[in-house]
Length: 90
Image (cartoon, rainbow, N blue to C red; front, side):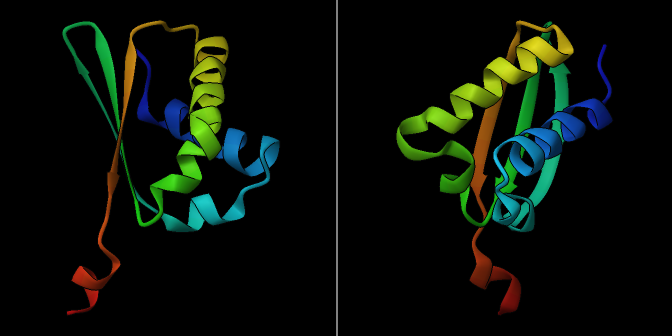
C-alpha cells in the first residue's frame, strides 16, 4: 500500500518541476487518497481543474503515465472536482 505522501510528491514533481506549472499548486485545495477494492482513488479538488487536465487532456494522461512509472501501480483512478472560489468568501 502506498502512502498519500508519495502521491503528493509525484503530483508536486510532475506539475512543478517537469511541467513548470506553478499555478496548479496554488489552485489545488485538497488532495486525498483512498484505497478501496484494490484501487487507489486519488481525489483532487482545485479552483481551476482545467490546469491539471491540460489542453485536450494531455497533461492528465501524462500524469497518469508518470504515476504508473514512478509508483509502479496500475489500478488507480483520478477524480477531479472543481471547488467554487466564491463559496469560501460568502
